[in-house]
Image 1 (cartoon, rainbow, N blue to C red):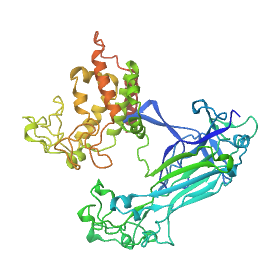
Image 2: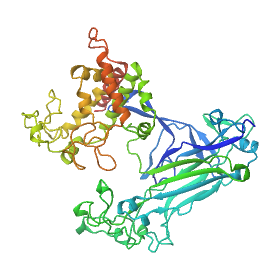
Image 3: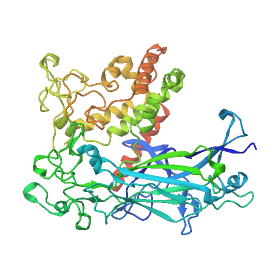
Image 4: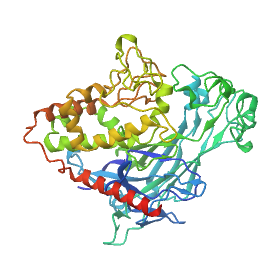
Length: 540
């Protein structure tokens, strides 16, 4: 038949779940470019069709009126849904002729299968302690995959256990909860009524509900030790059941583990670089595999997906300048061809969006503090002869100080005062707010053509005087990637940035635009800021 199932696949193939102790999950939302932007960015959250799971495992779609991220002291988890799809085609047909369709009970029946023939295998693991100590015995998760079928709509709990060993970190009579998985009931089989809003109710789907966001450790971690810098216990007493002789408590981390302050040490007075306190959390990596069982399903390719359970996102309405999607695009083989196809207005749109994301990223951190903790001391041969800040700011010989050659010479910064405690942070936000508009970017390139390329750090570049603890002011300044090297844009972003700079320099200059001719986006931003200031005055 033309609709014979040839392979299964799961969408999305990769998802991020987020920890939370609330019994309600975050509603679905999307990022949007709003007409009335915030002062520190313009991205807002727009509700999307959301699925409520009923007691019988069926789903009820609804459109939220707003988005909630917490219920009192309890943070709402992000609990992603996964849909199972099939590629269909006639026997012997080429894969490029197959047609993709949601897997439904009807499609299963057409191919001689039932819901009980759909098998989902779930494997979860937390490898943090194992990686940091170089000890594979410290991995914990599902030692054997959790298995459920499409006919089973109950919650299947993921128990984190130590692998079989002579000294398991998690005692055999204990486990660390890692959330649960549930195969959801298909309810859209009424002829001609499979849809509710944008949701196809016939589609087979399952859900991952992540853990609460708890910490576990040995008995020592439940003790307050003020003399060691621990005024409060690291874990509650009921979670202090890990074996302190299993290899994680007292372990020294490997040199590859950076930054080192991502784990608890026994003596907090020395910083988190000493022997481990033996604490672990309930984040994990989850892998899914779906297949059709029985003789008829042996030739059907299984589908796979993965989820990464991470801490909550405390800035969900800010778009980072570097996303997971950007990383995947960089590793795809065709990004150079895609870059070649981006020209003209599309190139302008991309660069403006990129710097809007950079602005929203800058709005999140304290640059004054970053400079104090992470700025390199610039070699004498590379210093400007005079202090641009005229002695108003400390450490002019360090990155972003008054003698840094990368500093823009037209901006002299004041020192910190009670009225202006973070002058560098305020200046960075002001400059990035200007560069978040295309005209601001074009003005910068017009006055100093190479400045953007001098400022933006090339992919994976580390200067000769930089260390894992300190870096120059190249953009993004002082931010670190997972192994504590300077964070950078990825290859395709940097190449597209260079392409836009070259393209902008070829644009006909023409007569200068009148001062009032600002872009539509800039005009909306101006109106929003003035409106917010006016509201503040009225309230005052």
